Image 1 (tube, rainbow, N blue to C red):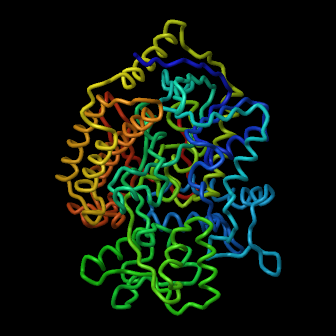
Image 2: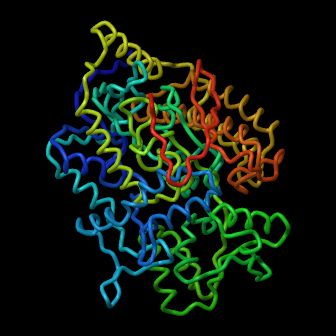
Image 3: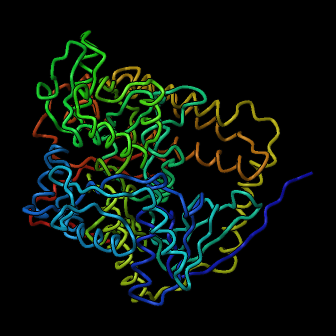
Length: 567
């Protein structure tokens, strides 16, 4: 029996795609400042979705006493070796403490000392009890009036005409419904992309990774297809993590001052540098040269520090605490082995994402980006995503206040638009001769990226010939993905997720090939161009033109300068 899909049409003032950190805060900001109607489309459930799902134990972007927003800009700029948007970093840094205070007022527990001051963890961090941080945000959103949260609705495509956005298409994950959501403005807050590369852990444990495995780069992919300009996809992010559990290392490094050591007990981190990319690179090199495994030195810490570490990891990575318990040894009795993860594309730690202006507007009119999907502003973490959600929300309200256009679609165009998307979905649901499964093609994609585009298997290194092969092989997988089938809506979501990842892979390859230098060891280790060059103090941007990725080079936006779209 032929499977058919129902059509559901919805209209709102603002559509927010993604109910994570930035998406939630965008909704709260809009309702604080207007009576505009909102639809939040969340492919999981807003209660525990996004990067905050399991909680966090620190606010990693905060202006502590004696520091200024300018200091934070300097830190992020130095860590990214100058390839940042200083205007975006500054506008983000100015709001960090304000949104932190609002979170505390909403119920977040922030640890304080005997003087009532926040307990700092390093120069930019404060300690929190954050196991319920996402619940605090989602409960606040669920209590808002005239806000519709569509849980388990996966947005698959923007509705764009004449470089303006008019809404998006989505599918029900559990019901046979195609949603056409019309909006005056759209905020994309879908997060970054994981699962492009072969992960650390195989088979059943492949989802034990640094970044949420359900973040597939959907927002990037929809923007790329719609012709939006993207930036800095070559600045991949590779996290330095506790081996096997893929738990954070910063909690140990900053919490107890643990140094990175090799198997000989030598501290190697200062030999290579202490930038984020250099910490990974040093670990890779020590292993390559036969001085591995590498560790964080925890042997000899105090019993009190043992207990603090075990409790801290229960907030966001309980597998690490369980590993200590199962081994029968506390951190003070054994050093913690470390390794790099597979590469990710994420705008919260590095600068990958939409090319935006200070209003967080993309190059598609009416479309705004916030959080990990927004480029140019690395080291934003939780609070930076909140600030960007706030800025995007305020900009979206300004946009709809001056909104003069009708939806610009005739009845015939509207019908054709829906029918094309309906046919696309029903073709996948009714296709019976698929040679490969989604999982098989996903594994093939990850193997290609690992082998030819600088994955773990190649110590994150690549050269031009390898990238050309990667491009060719990803094209072949894209062709094969056109004949995938799905027996239900849940499987249909997996089909779209694979297609999203493949588009992002193509863009990553194009960017890696375009930057002819090695500015960030491991993050973009180009064997053809092993050195850094001042000629490459520029942004590598791209957009899709006639189905081809076109590279665009842009000059850096320095201190005191701002970039705004002219459309």
